[in-house]
Each structure stands twice: as structure tokens, then as C-alpha cells.
Image 1 (tube, rainbow, N blue to C red):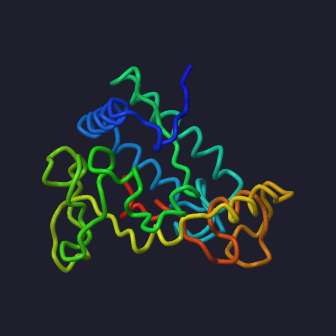
Image 2: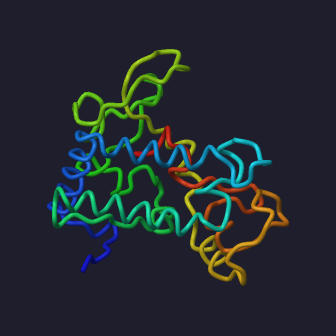
Image 3: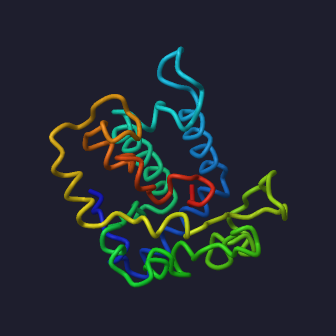
Length: 218
């Protein structure tokens, strides 16, 4: 049985195991398959008449399938990680805890021995430290074609992410929703529901961490 643990309670050995398994998944090319899988399911819309736009309702986002689709996605990722490191597991991140920090960019999840820190603005926001930085050699990411300074490497831009970490009040709003999901599945203030708040689309307000694949690990 897999025991879920918070990123805040991981031991040094558990961090190292997770990172090692993730790097090996990347080396085998399997991680990139997951990236493409997630991308492809976001491009087609649910109905033929709807626009083929990742910012519109699709198979993975902005609709009722958001939670079940990503649960299955993460379970398959975890199974692959455990095929490499049998003790590996996907930890969870309590955003509300780190939202209370004076500087959320210093949260344990971004430690150099885990996911590494922010990108450097002078280097097009490429990650500079940790195992996922390009210079470490274990996480190759191709150059972005629209860069002013083209070059490979994973990017993160915390200024777009961490100031909007959900708070405990945000969590209470979501948990107090009566309905799991309601149409029209958009950012208008008339759309309510647990999934809509969880995904960060309520009232067009919050943008959740990792919603932009260019700044997240994925």
C-alpha cells in the first residue's frame, strides 16, 4: 500500500528516491510521453463544434473530467516511477501551508535537493540549481522558439505562480460548494462548483501553480 506524504515531511532519502526515479523516467523518454499525452488531450475540444484551443474546455481541463483524468494520469506516472524505484511515490503539496510563508519561493518543495528553485530572468527564466537545471545534465528540454535568447533548459517564473497560491479561505470556499461541477465551464462569476474553484477558474481570479507547462516540471 502506498502512503501519501506531504512534501513538507519527506526525508532526505525519500526526496532523493523521487528525484532519482523522475530523472530516470526522463532518460528513458517515458516522461516526455506523458507531456505529449497531456498536451494532446488539451488541444481537441470535447465537441466537434468547439474551438481547438487549449484555453477552452477540453478532455483534461475546464470541465467535469479534470479530477478523474488527472488522478488516472498521476497513478500511471507513479506506477512508472515505482517500476524504477519500488519505494517511490508521488507526494502532495499543501499550497495553503506555503501561502502563509513570508516568501513562498523559499518553500521546501523548491529546495535544491528536491525540485530546485526559480528560473533566472536574465536567462529567460531557466532553472539554475538542482537536479532539473540544464547544467546538471539530467533534464533536457529543447529551446523555446520564441525566446529572445534561444537555448535549452527547463523554465520556471515564480512571479506568475506563487503570489496566487490558494489560501485556507480559498480552500474553504471550494469545500463548501454544493455542486461538483456546473456549466458553462468558464471563468465567468456565474459558473460555480467544486471543480471550477479547484482548478482556479472561479471569477477569473486565481491562476494555480503548474497551470502553465512552461513554468512547471511538467
